[in-house]
Image (cartoon, rainbow, N blue to C red; front, top):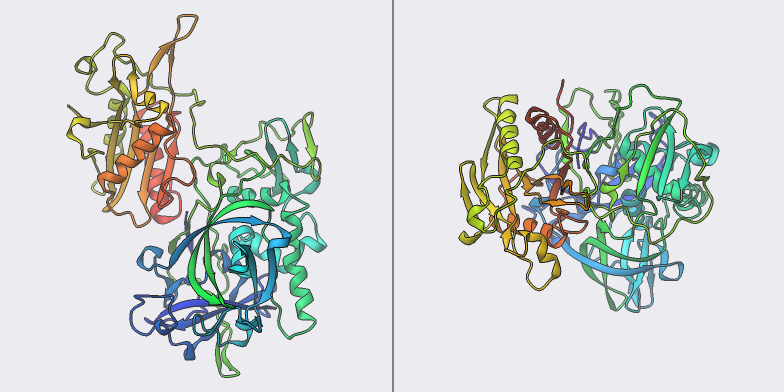
Length: 606
């Protein structure tokens, strides 16, 4: 997702590249009580970061501490490179990426200090990763057993919190302040938050002003009060416990689930205690499923400003500083030889956008958001939480929208066509898409352009038409699902796809539409397939090669019409647009909305 926030004033305003090495202590914010301070430990690079994970890449002797509000934690992770007060895009530097098949259980996990050591040596040897700051050495890490090594995977506690719990500024502040201990309804109204066991639908009643994606984050806690919510409360409890023995506090936390998962992480391999372990800088993906498929948000008291329907696709709200804070700066001073900056964000500073991965969890962005039909709702099949343990096998959907039956454009194929030559070169749906693209150009004249492109390098898979090249879906040989690649399998009439490249201020987006099959029901009435229009783009809006476009079509064939499922091409951002428009202009407006929000992080002004 793309978020907008003020540059962090606490970071030095210069041109030096700095790496976030670690997170240190949490302390009371004397200026803003509602936003505790979190130490961010950074080192300047020696030259360009060709190998950013190496000790020699940075000047560890000049490691510094900068304090920011915990509300900024969703935007920060270890290994991130900042230049001044702006982050460098993730695609400009690389760390080692690994996929671990882990079994998350109490027996497999331990919490240690970063400087923990045994007779076999330190957990994090200095020759592999140097932490010179005392609070960094005392910060907690979670170790997970893998293949007989109890310390095989080492994850900083702050990263566990950032990835699993602090999905927004508001949630982050509540967890670190300990609001849940004094007010159990700090995040959502417990007695009005219920699980419908029939269709895995979770009704979450949140406070006025809570955003959609915050409700998704809260739903994870609400659906598992004995596990996820328990550990979320433990974040502040651990801060209080650790503050009794030292002058600062360090959070401790466990993941919000137990069971098998695939964890995709970035970091580096280190030789720890005579064995090789992986030091995690940030988590990219967790396959453990959510215990519900749908979320029905309610607001308490009623919020008249909530939208009539939830945002489609994976639009996500800002998770940065949220409200602009006072421009008054706190002093910068020297503490035990360390540079500590207490500056607040400047409300006059230019706002920037940052791309954050939307594929954090299995099905997270495909959770269906259901708007309540009225202010009151029936609890006939709904049980309050905590209650019966939700079934663990429930995921959040596979990304297909084939049950959507709201298309307004009627698709009429040639019912008598038995050969490829007899199939019309451009089905009516394709012509409607082109009409929408023409309307799109008029929304922002001079900035938006489009062209119909080939999505394959095979000339035999291209049909030339008046509107441009039409691509045939690839054949998924060796699998029964390859039948989907044909409109008429008996006569081998291949299914077509329209692929359009759209540019907005030079930034590339790609729109996909598939040909729909018309069949006949037992009653003799025509029945039409219904799939979504699909849009993808890379994180830096660069041109996508034909091979990648072809891969998307091939995966759609394998998925029997679902464009991309979770875990497929995670490097691509994607949007799915349901066929609910009545005119090409309405579709153009929706496409423009998605392009604009992807680039700027906010919806276009009316």
